[in-house]
Length: 134
Image (cartoon, rainbow, N blue to C red; front, top):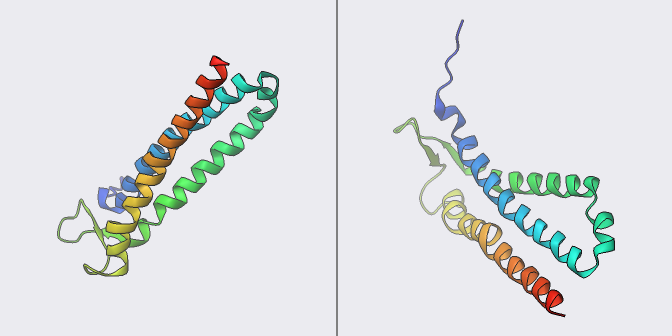
């Protein structure tokens, strides 16, 4: 017997997975820049500081952190009964979930997905340029 699962049962996953993947991809670039910076500053310590085991631990912990961060929105989401293929914020406008999803989470999303990685990327690149110039 074939079971059909409507897409609205996955409305939370549809929002959680792409956002966590977006965070992870940005932060992997930051980690790569950090590795390049260490390679320029002290090339003999790169293999020790960025071993396979440590890299796996860092990537797994980042993935876990970003899944937890994005899953905070899933507490406030459920599928819409009026529009069955869309997610909807639980509660009323002005409630805790509405305020978190519309005011707090966009700032977290901007900070972890753009501002902090951009600032770190610029700093790491400037250190690399400065060290190569020396």
